Image (cartoon, rainbow, N blue to C red; front, top):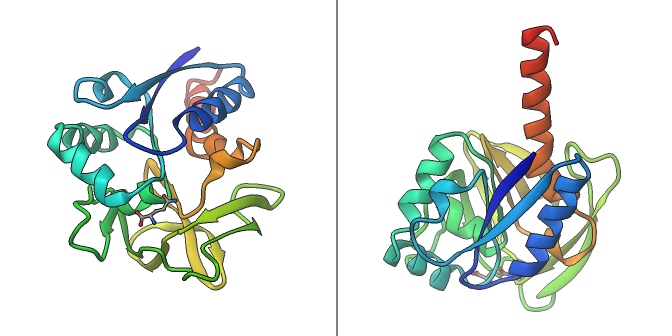
Length: 207
Ligand code: GLN
């Protein structure tokens, strides 16, 4: 099966995310065709979406100005998967706690931008993530934390604060899962839930 994956390509590690999506798809025997999203009209044809890091102010402005924001909202309303990482998490949050960010309200959390302070501007940490057997090597770069959660599942915490959550079809992380060659977060967000759904529907049909 070929999955059409859209990566928001305003800023951030677009090609690294594309590689991780392809690797995660391949581990399920699927193929991913990756398209870059810079203008409206691309999102409606995508099965899965990725919102990378960068600067949340600039990304959110671009998404609204180009008419991409309502397309992403419709994608989520259809129950289709999204992975939002770092600035992507801020853009996806219900409350970005910053007037300069025009967020999409896809994930029922409020966030604090650049929350780890200057000393820990960037660092790597082995993170226990719900759904993964072994810790994930998480790279944090001027990362946000999730400071209050509504109706979401917390998938990981660092230093007592939430850094990965799932809200329905959306998985959002404070860290950058594309910066190692470990594609398990992309897998968790996109393909494991897909595979589970396919398995459930097979069981329903008694196949
Ligand atoms: N500091 C950025 C912001 O607040 C996020 C950093 C990142 O995506 N690595 O928008």
